[in-house]
Length: 324
Image (cartoon, rainbow, N blue to C red):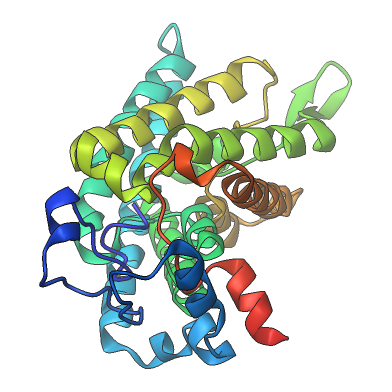
Protein backbone atom coordinates (compact mmCIF):
# COMPACT_ATOMS: atom_id res chain seq x y z
CA UNK A 1 0.00 0.00 0.00
CA UNK A 2 2.44 2.57 1.16
CA UNK A 3 5.34 1.27 -0.73
CA UNK A 4 3.90 0.93 -4.19
CA UNK A 5 2.53 4.17 -5.41
CA UNK A 6 3.48 6.46 -2.57
CA UNK A 7 5.93 8.04 -5.03
CA UNK A 8 8.88 6.89 -2.94
CA UNK A 9 10.30 3.84 -4.59
CA UNK A 10 9.98 1.82 -7.75
CA UNK A 11 9.48 -1.95 -7.67
CA UNK A 12 12.13 -4.02 -9.39
CA UNK A 13 12.01 -7.62 -10.46
CA UNK A 14 15.01 -9.91 -10.81
CA UNK A 15 15.60 -8.93 -14.44
CA UNK A 16 15.41 -5.21 -13.89
CA UNK A 17 17.91 -5.42 -11.07
CA UNK A 18 20.50 -6.82 -13.42
CA UNK A 19 19.80 -4.51 -16.32
CA UNK A 20 21.96 -1.56 -17.14
CA UNK A 21 19.22 1.07 -17.37
CA UNK A 22 17.36 1.47 -14.08
CA UNK A 23 14.67 3.88 -13.05
CA UNK A 24 15.77 5.58 -9.85
CA UNK A 25 13.34 6.06 -6.96
CA UNK A 26 11.85 9.54 -6.97
CA UNK A 27 13.20 10.69 -3.62
CA UNK A 28 16.41 8.70 -3.38
CA UNK A 29 19.96 9.30 -4.47
CA UNK A 30 21.30 6.99 -7.20
CA UNK A 31 23.76 4.42 -5.88
CA UNK A 32 26.34 2.40 -7.84
CA UNK A 33 25.35 -1.21 -8.45
CA UNK A 34 28.56 -2.56 -6.89
CA UNK A 35 27.89 -0.90 -3.53
CA UNK A 36 27.36 -3.29 -0.66
CA UNK A 37 24.37 -3.09 1.69
CA UNK A 38 26.62 -1.59 4.35
CA UNK A 39 27.74 1.15 1.95
CA UNK A 40 24.13 1.89 1.07
CA UNK A 41 23.25 2.20 4.74
CA UNK A 42 26.17 4.57 5.24
CA UNK A 43 25.06 6.66 2.26
CA UNK A 44 21.48 6.90 3.57
CA UNK A 45 22.59 7.96 7.06
CA UNK A 46 24.72 10.78 5.59
CA UNK A 47 21.65 12.69 4.42
CA UNK A 48 20.89 16.10 5.86
CA UNK A 49 18.01 16.57 8.29
CA UNK A 50 15.97 18.36 5.62
CA UNK A 51 16.44 15.47 3.19
CA UNK A 52 15.64 12.86 5.84
CA UNK A 53 12.44 14.64 6.83
CA UNK A 54 11.51 15.13 3.18
CA UNK A 55 10.74 18.81 3.64
CA UNK A 56 10.67 19.21 -0.13
CA UNK A 57 7.38 17.29 -0.09
CA UNK A 58 5.64 20.35 1.36
CA UNK A 59 6.50 22.18 -1.87
CA UNK A 60 5.66 19.30 -4.19
CA UNK A 61 2.46 19.78 -6.17
CA UNK A 62 2.36 16.04 -6.91
CA UNK A 63 2.29 15.20 -3.20
CA UNK A 64 -0.58 17.60 -2.56
CA UNK A 65 -2.46 16.19 -5.54
CA UNK A 66 -1.92 12.69 -4.19
CA UNK A 67 -3.22 13.81 -0.80
CA UNK A 68 -6.49 14.71 -2.53
CA UNK A 69 -6.85 11.02 -3.34
CA UNK A 70 -6.31 10.25 0.34
CA UNK A 71 -8.95 12.82 1.29
CA UNK A 72 -11.61 11.52 -1.09
CA UNK A 73 -10.72 7.88 -0.46
CA UNK A 74 -11.01 8.28 3.31
CA UNK A 75 -14.29 10.16 2.95
CA UNK A 76 -15.74 7.34 0.85
CA UNK A 77 -14.39 4.72 3.24
CA UNK A 78 -15.86 6.42 6.32
CA UNK A 79 -19.24 6.94 4.66
CA UNK A 80 -19.44 3.33 3.49
CA UNK A 81 -18.14 1.72 6.69
CA UNK A 82 -20.34 3.77 9.00
CA UNK A 83 -23.32 3.09 6.76
CA UNK A 84 -22.57 -0.64 6.99
CA UNK A 85 -22.35 -0.42 10.79
CA UNK A 86 -25.76 1.22 11.00
CA UNK A 87 -27.50 -0.91 8.38
CA UNK A 88 -26.33 -4.30 9.68
CA UNK A 89 -27.54 -3.54 13.19
CA UNK A 90 -30.72 -1.81 12.02
CA UNK A 91 -31.77 -4.76 9.84
CA UNK A 92 -31.60 -7.05 12.88
CA UNK A 93 -29.71 -9.91 11.22
CA UNK A 94 -28.82 -12.98 13.30
CA UNK A 95 -25.07 -12.34 13.34
CA UNK A 96 -24.58 -8.61 12.70
CA UNK A 97 -20.90 -8.70 13.68
CA UNK A 98 -20.10 -11.35 11.09
CA UNK A 99 -22.05 -9.61 8.33
CA UNK A 100 -20.43 -6.31 9.25
CA UNK A 101 -16.95 -7.83 9.10
CA UNK A 102 -17.51 -9.41 5.68
CA UNK A 103 -18.93 -6.24 4.16
CA UNK A 104 -16.16 -4.14 5.72
CA UNK A 105 -13.50 -6.41 4.20
CA UNK A 106 -15.04 -6.00 0.73
CA UNK A 107 -15.37 -2.22 0.99
CA UNK A 108 -11.83 -1.75 2.30
CA UNK A 109 -10.32 -3.83 -0.51
CA UNK A 110 -12.28 -1.92 -3.16
CA UNK A 111 -11.36 1.52 -1.82
CA UNK A 112 -7.69 0.53 -1.52
CA UNK A 113 -7.65 -0.57 -5.14
CA UNK A 114 -9.29 2.71 -6.19
CA UNK A 115 -6.93 4.99 -4.26
CA UNK A 116 -3.68 3.04 -4.75
CA UNK A 117 -2.82 4.41 -8.23
CA UNK A 118 -3.20 7.97 -6.94
CA UNK A 119 -1.43 8.07 -3.60
CA UNK A 120 -0.35 4.55 -2.74
CA UNK A 121 -3.59 3.64 -0.99
CA UNK A 122 -3.10 4.59 2.66
CA UNK A 123 -6.55 5.97 3.70
CA UNK A 124 -5.49 5.36 7.30
CA UNK A 125 -3.08 7.27 9.59
CA UNK A 126 -1.79 3.90 10.82
CA UNK A 127 -0.45 3.11 7.36
CA UNK A 128 1.01 6.57 6.80
CA UNK A 129 2.71 6.69 10.21
CA UNK A 130 4.04 3.15 9.90
CA UNK A 131 5.30 3.84 6.37
CA UNK A 132 7.10 6.94 7.64
CA UNK A 133 8.80 4.97 10.42
CA UNK A 134 9.91 2.23 8.04
CA UNK A 135 11.08 4.87 5.57
CA UNK A 136 8.74 4.19 2.66
CA UNK A 137 7.61 7.81 2.74
CA UNK A 138 8.99 10.91 4.41
CA UNK A 139 7.69 12.35 7.67
CA UNK A 140 6.52 15.39 5.73
CA UNK A 141 4.45 13.33 3.32
CA UNK A 142 3.00 11.36 6.24
CA UNK A 143 1.86 14.59 7.90
CA UNK A 144 0.23 15.75 4.67
CA UNK A 145 -1.51 12.41 4.17
CA UNK A 146 -2.73 12.15 7.77
CA UNK A 147 -4.14 15.68 7.64
CA UNK A 148 -5.95 14.83 4.40
CA UNK A 149 -7.29 11.61 5.90
CA UNK A 150 -8.69 13.39 8.96
CA UNK A 151 -10.36 16.02 6.80
CA UNK A 152 -11.74 13.33 4.51
CA UNK A 153 -13.10 11.38 7.49
CA UNK A 154 -14.92 14.49 8.70
CA UNK A 155 -16.41 15.01 5.24
CA UNK A 156 -17.51 11.38 5.13
CA UNK A 157 -19.18 11.71 8.52
CA UNK A 158 -20.89 14.92 7.39
CA UNK A 159 -22.20 13.14 4.28
CA UNK A 160 -23.60 10.36 6.45
CA UNK A 161 -25.23 12.86 8.80
CA UNK A 162 -26.91 14.50 5.82
CA UNK A 163 -28.66 11.29 4.71
CA UNK A 164 -29.73 9.69 8.02
CA UNK A 165 -32.42 10.77 10.43
CA UNK A 166 -31.56 12.44 13.72
CA UNK A 167 -32.84 9.36 15.55
CA UNK A 168 -30.41 7.05 13.77
CA UNK A 169 -27.60 9.56 14.20
CA UNK A 170 -28.17 9.61 17.94
CA UNK A 171 -28.79 5.88 18.33
CA UNK A 172 -25.74 4.73 16.37
CA UNK A 173 -23.43 7.70 17.04
CA UNK A 174 -22.90 8.03 13.28
CA UNK A 175 -21.20 4.63 13.33
CA UNK A 176 -18.26 6.18 15.18
CA UNK A 177 -15.76 4.65 17.61
CA UNK A 178 -17.24 4.33 21.09
CA UNK A 179 -16.06 2.81 24.33
CA UNK A 180 -19.27 3.36 26.24
CA UNK A 181 -22.84 4.55 25.67
CA UNK A 182 -25.57 5.76 27.97
CA UNK A 183 -28.56 3.43 27.99
CA UNK A 184 -31.75 3.14 30.04
CA UNK A 185 -31.48 0.85 33.06
CA UNK A 186 -33.83 -0.45 35.76
CA UNK A 187 -33.04 2.55 37.95
CA UNK A 188 -32.51 5.17 35.29
CA UNK A 189 -29.76 5.87 32.78
CA UNK A 190 -26.58 3.79 33.06
CA UNK A 191 -23.25 3.77 31.24
CA UNK A 192 -22.40 0.50 29.51
CA UNK A 193 -19.35 -0.47 27.50
CA UNK A 194 -15.74 -1.54 27.80
CA UNK A 195 -13.15 -0.46 30.34
CA UNK A 196 -10.46 1.92 29.13
CA UNK A 197 -7.56 -0.46 29.80
CA UNK A 198 -9.18 -3.31 27.85
CA UNK A 199 -9.98 -1.08 24.88
CA UNK A 200 -6.45 0.32 24.92
CA UNK A 201 -4.82 -3.12 24.77
CA UNK A 202 -7.24 -4.28 22.10
CA UNK A 203 -6.33 -1.25 19.97
CA UNK A 204 -2.60 -1.95 20.29
CA UNK A 205 -2.88 -5.69 19.63
CA UNK A 206 -5.32 -5.48 16.73
CA UNK A 207 -3.35 -2.73 14.98
CA UNK A 208 -0.10 -4.66 15.35
CA UNK A 209 -1.74 -7.80 13.95
CA UNK A 210 -3.01 -5.74 11.00
CA UNK A 211 0.51 -4.53 10.22
CA UNK A 212 2.12 -7.90 10.83
CA UNK A 213 -0.36 -10.12 9.01
CA UNK A 214 -1.22 -8.05 5.96
CA UNK A 215 0.34 -4.61 5.51
CA UNK A 216 3.88 -6.00 5.57
CA UNK A 217 3.05 -7.77 2.31
CA UNK A 218 2.56 -4.37 0.71
CA UNK A 219 5.75 -2.98 2.26
CA UNK A 220 7.84 -5.84 0.88
CA UNK A 221 8.01 -4.94 -2.82
CA UNK A 222 9.05 -8.46 -3.89
CA UNK A 223 6.20 -10.15 -2.04
CA UNK A 224 3.68 -7.58 -3.26
CA UNK A 225 4.81 -8.17 -6.84
CA UNK A 226 4.61 -11.96 -6.47
CA UNK A 227 1.12 -11.94 -4.95
CA UNK A 228 -0.34 -9.14 -7.05
CA UNK A 229 -2.05 -5.92 -6.04
CA UNK A 230 -5.60 -7.33 -5.95
CA UNK A 231 -4.65 -10.26 -3.73
CA UNK A 232 -2.61 -8.11 -1.32
CA UNK A 233 -5.40 -5.58 -0.84
CA UNK A 234 -7.95 -8.38 -0.51
CA UNK A 235 -5.85 -9.89 2.27
CA UNK A 236 -5.65 -6.50 4.00
CA UNK A 237 -9.44 -6.22 3.82
CA UNK A 238 -9.98 -9.76 5.12
CA UNK A 239 -7.56 -9.28 8.03
CA UNK A 240 -9.26 -6.00 8.99
CA UNK A 241 -12.67 -7.66 8.80
CA UNK A 242 -11.51 -10.52 11.01
CA UNK A 243 -10.05 -8.13 13.56
CA UNK A 244 -13.32 -6.16 13.68
CA UNK A 245 -15.23 -9.39 14.21
CA UNK A 246 -12.84 -10.60 16.92
CA UNK A 247 -12.72 -7.31 18.81
CA UNK A 248 -16.50 -6.97 18.89
CA UNK A 249 -17.29 -10.59 19.80
CA UNK A 250 -14.52 -11.41 22.28
CA UNK A 251 -15.58 -8.52 24.51
CA UNK A 252 -19.34 -9.05 24.09
CA UNK A 253 -19.90 -5.59 25.48
CA UNK A 254 -22.72 -3.40 24.28
CA UNK A 255 -21.62 0.16 23.76
CA UNK A 256 -18.13 -0.80 22.55
CA UNK A 257 -17.85 -0.40 18.77
CA UNK A 258 -14.76 -2.61 18.43
CA UNK A 259 -11.14 -1.80 17.66
CA UNK A 260 -10.91 1.30 15.48
CA UNK A 261 -7.52 0.63 13.82
CA UNK A 262 -8.10 3.84 11.86
CA UNK A 263 -7.80 7.02 13.95
CA UNK A 264 -9.09 9.19 11.12
CA UNK A 265 -12.40 7.31 10.97
CA UNK A 266 -12.85 7.74 14.72
CA UNK A 267 -11.87 11.41 14.46
CA UNK A 268 -14.35 12.20 11.68
CA UNK A 269 -17.39 10.93 13.55
CA UNK A 270 -16.22 12.59 16.78
CA UNK A 271 -15.85 15.99 15.09
CA UNK A 272 -19.29 15.82 13.46
CA UNK A 273 -21.26 14.08 16.22
CA UNK A 274 -19.27 15.17 19.27
CA UNK A 275 -20.52 14.27 22.73
CA UNK A 276 -19.51 10.90 24.16
CA UNK A 277 -17.48 10.06 21.03
CA UNK A 278 -14.70 12.16 22.54
CA UNK A 279 -14.69 10.00 25.69
CA UNK A 280 -11.55 7.93 25.49
CA UNK A 281 -10.87 9.17 21.97
CA UNK A 282 -7.15 9.28 22.73
CA UNK A 283 -7.14 5.47 22.81
CA UNK A 284 -7.82 5.32 19.07
CA UNK A 285 -4.70 7.43 18.43
CA UNK A 286 -2.22 6.36 21.11
CA UNK A 287 -2.95 2.63 20.77
CA UNK A 288 -2.26 2.45 17.02
CA UNK A 289 0.79 4.72 17.40
CA UNK A 290 2.32 2.31 19.91
CA UNK A 291 1.53 -0.60 17.61
CA UNK A 292 3.28 1.17 14.71
CA UNK A 293 6.40 1.73 16.80
CA UNK A 294 6.36 -1.89 17.97
CA UNK A 295 6.01 -3.09 14.38
CA UNK A 296 8.88 -0.86 13.27
CA UNK A 297 11.11 -2.31 15.97
CA UNK A 298 10.10 -5.77 14.83
CA UNK A 299 11.22 -4.98 11.27
CA UNK A 300 14.60 -3.85 12.62
CA UNK A 301 15.09 -6.96 14.76
CA UNK A 302 14.30 -9.77 12.31
CA UNK A 303 17.22 -10.94 10.11
CA UNK A 304 17.32 -9.13 6.78
CA UNK A 305 17.88 -12.34 4.85
CA UNK A 306 14.43 -13.54 5.94
CA UNK A 307 12.68 -11.01 3.76
CA UNK A 308 13.35 -8.89 0.71
CA UNK A 309 14.05 -5.42 2.06
CA UNK A 310 15.36 -2.16 0.73
CA UNK A 311 17.22 0.59 2.51
CA UNK A 312 15.17 3.76 2.67
CA UNK A 313 16.42 7.32 3.10
CA UNK A 314 13.53 8.24 5.38
CA UNK A 315 13.94 5.40 7.87
CA UNK A 316 13.30 6.69 11.41
CA UNK A 317 16.80 5.81 12.61
CA UNK A 318 18.28 7.77 9.70
CA UNK A 319 16.17 10.77 10.64
CA UNK A 320 17.38 10.59 14.24
CA UNK A 321 20.99 10.27 13.12
CA UNK A 322 20.58 13.32 10.88
CA UNK A 323 19.46 15.33 13.91
CA UNK A 324 22.68 14.61 15.74
